[in-house]
Image 1 (cartoon, rainbow, N blue to C red):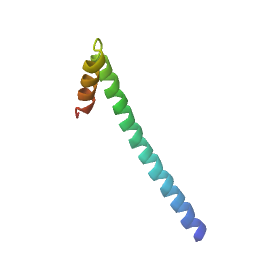
Image 2 (image 1 turned 135 degrees about the horizontal axis):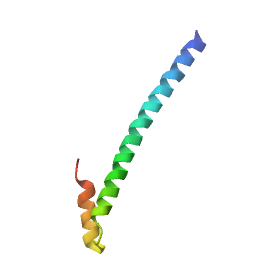
Image 3 (image 1 turned 90 degrees about the vertical axis):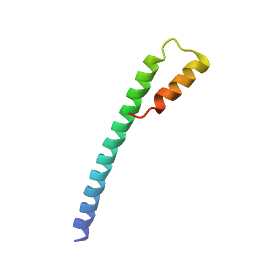
Image 4 (image 1 turned 90 degrees about the horizontal axis):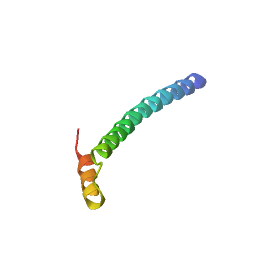
Length: 62
């Protein structure tokens, strides 16, 4: 009985880890996409202007 319980806990833990890992990958990918998009839009801006633009662009929710 102990072995079955342990196997079940390991299986559940693995499934939970995989599902959380997938969610983290989606969030990271959307952040990377946002960074790439903002970076393209910031072309030509330099210094404080670029810094302010990037800050504003990256903080936009959406």
